[in-house]
Image: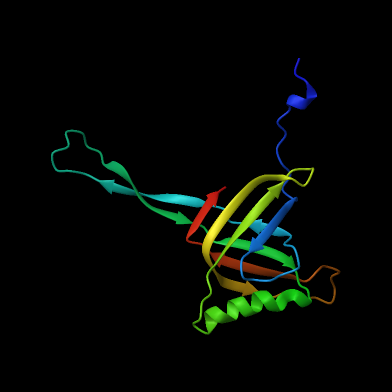
Length: 148
């Protein structure tokens, strides 16, 4: 019989930290999505193939856009200013990390991204009939994503 200390329970998704170098924000993010990567398949066939099929070679690697959501606070100007630099043609690329913590708030896993810049920034939706937190959404493009 296995000891209870031998269990390999999955980490919980709510316990994480986000750091973006050069972008000062004191507010934590409530949601992160888009940690994805893919490789294109390049189809290739030579004229002397005996079988009627194509070969599939690895192509370019691609990394998905990362989306962050957080409650709108007085700290919102930092993300706005970073996005505005792109609009003004003075794009500031940044590196950063998304760190998943275990229940003791120790580092369990870490993803590092680099050469990121804000593609889209959505302000909150206002509705006087609701009692919800005003959420802003930031979408960044990244050129590289790796698990550290």
